[in-house]
Image (cartoon, rainbow, N blue to C red; front, side, top):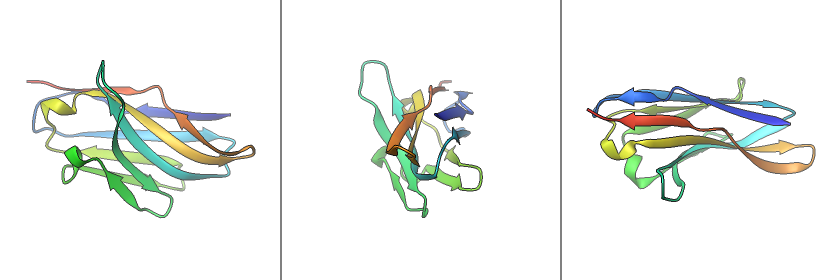
Length: 119
């Protein structure tokens, strides 16, 4: 069984910063891709940023230049540094971990962490 746990959300003013963390644990052979998605009530979940095991990153257009994703393979952990936050960054941020397990390659989601940008 694989567990994915996010932390670091909260309330921040526009222009502020937050750092999210996500750790995967369990019977994992290797973590292939980890990343962040966000969802606002009534809309579809959208890509924020993902990173491969080799460190290749992909960002959603709205966060390029403001957010930075990184990972520590020794800790099975991914981080999202969010700078210059805007009102429209508000939402629930979900971590996704695409891993190699005994049954093959599978994707797991965390429970989500709320980020609210408000003055």
